[in-house]
Image (cartoon, rainbow, N blue to C red; front, side):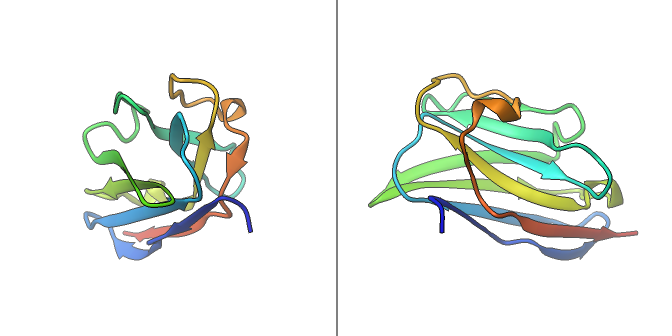
Length: 123
């Protein structure tokens, strides 16, 4: 098992909410959430760095909120998702970096990845 583990996925109706969590073993300089729907490329959703500066994709801005805290043995990353739409259906992945101090939505920045948690939004 790697240093990142996501929880909190599930099935919800359109307009509903879900909160994803990512438990990390250790500390990271930047963390992010990505998603991938069947037949589509992996897409950056939201990112946060240790100054708590956040970045969002246009598709989720105003609906999703990324946050993070540090306690004990590692960081925990959250994604609060509201006003969910069927097009938000995807596998959601947590990603982390230990070197760059700016968190981007570029997948190649992140060497550490969780296994993903499925989010399904029905209409």
